[in-house]
Length: 246
Image (cartoon, rainbow, N blue to C red; front, side, top):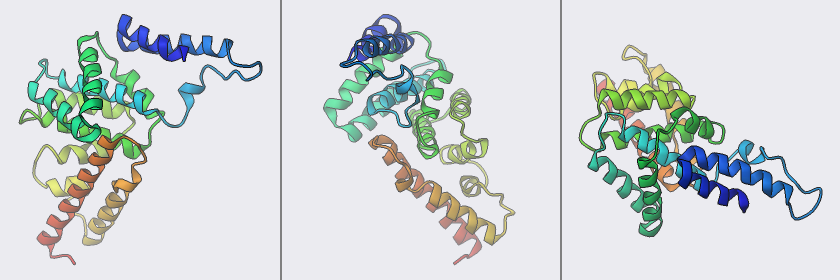
């Protein structure tokens, strides 16, 4: 309990970095004054658990939202509205409002470290979930009608910190930034690929991005997985028609 109180106090005093320090200090106190001798846990247990809690995930997701919204040097109202509407449809109005209040606070605070946030998430989330995070961030960047080069650079930086490969990043980018051979880029194959190679790429993508593979309780990420899966299918159908594949 003390660790969470410390995190809250630290957040209001020094933002995200203060929350981490407050949580850490509170963990030490919790362990020292545990309910019984011999039951104390390592202070680092919370930092090495395989899965992140919903509250921690939301806080870090909002931090990434803030980084993308600020990437081009201006805060777009349409991008802010995108985040609000997405969370309302996902979590319901009451919880979304609470999350968005936290978002506003984070947005007003000092500089957020993309590397620290992404390192936290990379250690606690599956690869498929991190891919959906990038999909969501591109959706925010596109909310004002166009995606700037600065926003693309920021999301690419985030992708690197999340340990997402460049090819995977380009595949997701192709779903939002249209260019020649777009369907092939989504499937991560060259236009010169054989029919067999295209079919194999589709099977791998369909398996990788199937919503059932995204093991998370966060409904926003689940919805993103469904959308991405549909785009993979649409890309393959486009190539099927182009090549006359069965």
